[in-house]
Amino acid sequence: EMVACFLHIVGQGCSVRNAIERFQHSCETVSKIFGEVLESLCRMSFHLIKHVDPEFKDVPHKIISDSRYMPHFKDCIGTIDAVHVPVCISHLKAISYTGRKGIPTQNVMAVCDFDMQFTFCWAGWKGSANDTRKFYIALRDPTLNFPHPPDGNYYLVDFGYPLRKGYMSPYKGERCHLYDF
Image 1 (cartoon, rainbow, N blue to C red):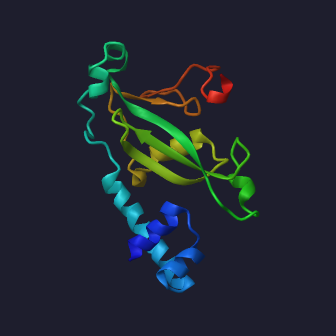
Image 2 (cartoon, helix red, strand yellow):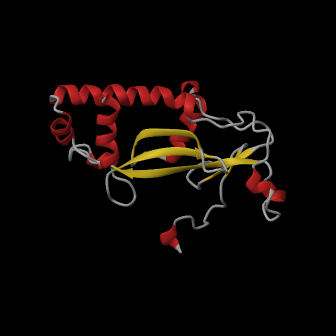
């Protein structure tokens, strides 16, 4: 019932008040349930969201099978980018959560492999947070379990991330957002 209540709120975008009515529990109980399930999912994420081959020894099938990519991307192990997820937040906090599109968002840093599997995900940042700042914290904080590339491998990263060993970003001035085209 706890997971069902959590999924009802998150999966359908329902309010806590709606969950109170649906599951016939008090506001305090629903809030407690939501917090407990969320905390459990966060703890589980360190075990579930990870690369299948943590040593990155195998070249992804999508790279091997396409001659256009093989010579250039055989050492690439995935991509890193941020996504802005719209949030409902109090007007007092909305300014710091407002991103470049002018709406309150949460800035989520994600790492994906070539099979479109998440290998790292870090949510909780305000929409106005700088990608480079998040990136450097993820690299330095061992509790986040960030999948560092081994020597000789690299990630493709968005232009908001620095160009450094193991992380290849586009040239400065290259257009990267659809509205730029």
